[in-house]
Image (cartoon, rainbow, N blue to C red; front, top):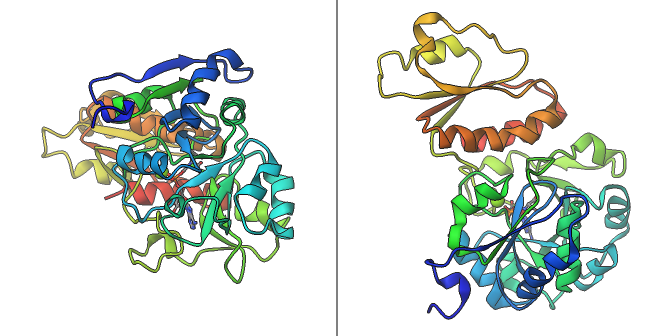
Length: 351
Ligand code: TXA
Ligand code: MG
């Protein structure tokens, strides 16, 4: 033990800052090389920061699971820099998959297809399928291209914690468990990719994301959302990573319709320090006798645009945890397909 960098918890990761739009290729060479040789490199994608390892190395893959504290039953997404690289990952890049890739790649859509034997089974937690996506973030693509190998990357957080949308979140959550952290500022989408299975009888969205069913239906009209599968806590879940409790902040989180009523529950609990996540249509006046329960700087309005709300949500949860909030109350966001991924993540973050 201790001979591999990630085993040594005393050593800080190497931090490298690059421009998000046109990253300095020279600065990425060392982490790209380390990545290809088995190191763990955290890097920005347009959704959240990923914890990358060489997807063709079973040993590198096992280090991802160890660093995250993630059960071996939870499969990883393989990231590629160019569409043609998908042929090395999947058994068949089907006509449906090609249509989707042409429309949504590079971007926050993950496709589940048959797994080629060149990809170690541990990437997919032993499944015969594999998740693959081509990210849109210039830093992710430059890093993967320089590494010269497909990159397996879950979100760069400890198991069940909130996904990171900034390099600071990765450092705080994983610290010396990772060898490099590449910092290119906050991510743009803010929620994890839409996961779409093309190996079910009908194309099935296993994890909603900011690419919605309605958008995918313009390309594949038969697409459906998995039937509540994501919230059922059984071994039969089509996507084993969709455990009920996930994406949780340290504070207890509740999604509430009536803020004043929810706040009143804490009136008799002087130790409660409450953070609020509102949207533009939330009632803005909190009854005066309850206003003291809300920590300073802990009343966050994420607005009424779902893309903007998603962009800010995880950052808001990290921020409220940092403030030491014991409870987070989230005003129920608007309904509708563009809000579906937001509702999904909030439901998982709630206890
Ligand atoms: O936006 C994202 O997807 C981010 C960035 C880093 O790309 N990655 C991410 O990875 O969210 P992770 O590991 O946190 O989530 C992967 C999801 C899990 O829900 C997992 O169950 C599902 O993808 N998944 C992976 N491989 C699968 C497979 N072969 N079959 C079904 N679901 C799979
Ligand atoms: Mg994750």
